[in-house]
Structures are given as structure tokens and as C-alpha cells.
Amino acid sequence: MPLSATEQAKKAVGEKVAALVVSGMRLGLGTGSTAAWAIRAIGRRVREEGLQVVGVPTSYAAEQLARAEGIPLVTLADVEELDLAFDGADEVSPALDLIKGRGAAHTREKVVATQARRFVVLVDASKLVHRLGTRCPVPVEVLPMAAAPVMRQLRRMGAEPVLRMGKAKDGPVVTDQGFWVIDAHFPEGIDDPQALAMTLSTIPGVLDHGLFLGMATDVLVGEANGQIRHMQ
Ligand code: 5RP
Image (cartoon, rainbow, N blue to C red; front, side):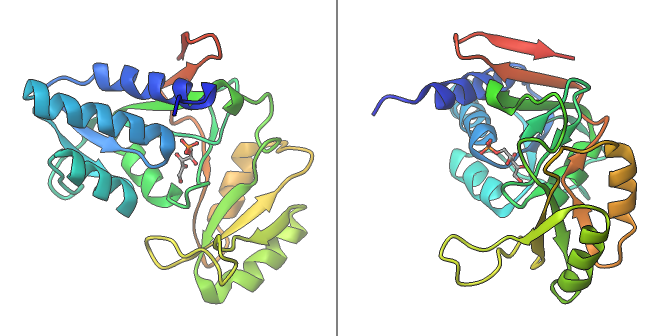
């Protein structure tokens, strides 16, 4: 079946970042459908060109895919820093601030991204927004026993919190850490992402949130016309 225009854009940016990789690099391997294109393209280069890299996966899903593709894996205990980390995003602002976490992997994704000298974000053009929060809620990963007080606190902060449920609606989504995710909706968008990020980080029971501010060094945007826009 031919790929949709969106999927083609995701594939193009995934293959673009894979082409930036050179032997010896220590990589952060992102999570989601766009990052998966990059992992597959890097795996192909490992098998066909003898590209020598190691990767730190940002989720169990990324780990499984990287293993299947033959990319050697290490942990953050094994490497002092990463040369390049790549990942998808759910929103990208003009300042290159991000909302991540539709895949419930934002906590590990943030840890890995902070260890990288270069953090390349891969998106199709639908992810670009003028104001964070207008397209997606902010995912907040919480200790299950703290979910109710965290939701009350989010309401006091003007958000509309929704506990994220599994596809079968048979219970909350459980993260790789065994935590839950509350999606904090801000119908008018987020006025001050810095202030919100700081406040969210101080709520007891919150592991981490999906605001990635000042972290992206590059954003590769797959456009509808097949071009790739490089934002820095
Ligand atoms: C997972 C993420 C993903 O990177 C983000 O949701 C984008 O996913 P996709 O590339 O499938 O649109 O943050 O936690």
C-alpha cells in the first residue's frame, strides 16, 4: 500500500537524520512512528555499510525495534554523553520548544535528550504550532496513588486534566516505569511554558512532564511538497 503524505514526510525526515550519522557515534534512539523510520534507516546502514554506532533507547518499543534492526545498545551508565539524539514531537513552537509524550515515553526521552550534544527533532509539518498547547495536551507522568491530587492541582492551575486510558478502555495507560499519564489540556494554549514547566516539576507525585523547552538543537520538518525544512 502506498504511504500517505504524512507517512512519507515522517520517512523523509527519519532517513535524513540517519544520513547524518557517522561511525563512532553514540546515539539516543527516539520513540514513535517518526523516530522508527530513523531507527530502521540506521539499522539498514549498520547491516549494509558496516556503520558502527551504539544507541540508548528511549522506551521498550524503541529498544525492541533497535534490537530487531541490529543496532548495538548501551545504557547511560556506559557512555559519558551522546553525540546525537533524535526523536519525534507532538508540537513544535517557533522557538523550537516542544510538547512530547503522546507515546507516554517523554520521561525517558527527556533524560536521553539532555545527555546529547545535538538533539534533532523529526516532525511532519502538521506538528508546527504558533502557541504550545493549541494542538495537544501536556502529558504529565504520575505515580498512580498521586493521580487524584495531581488532577485537582492541575484544575486549580486552569488545566482540564484527563487520565489517559488504554485503547481497550480497560484501565489507565501504564508507562515503561509503571506510572500513569494525565493529559493536561489548555484549550486557549499555554501563556508561559517556562512557568508551567517549573510548576509541574514541583508537584509531588509528578515524575516528569512533556514540555521540552530550549532542548532541540535542530528540527527537521517534512513538508507536504516532499521538501525538508531545517529549523535551528
Ligand atoms: C512519544 C513521543 C513521540 O515522539 C511523539 O508522540 C511523536 O510521535 P509520532 O512520531 O508517532 O507522531 O513523544 O512519547
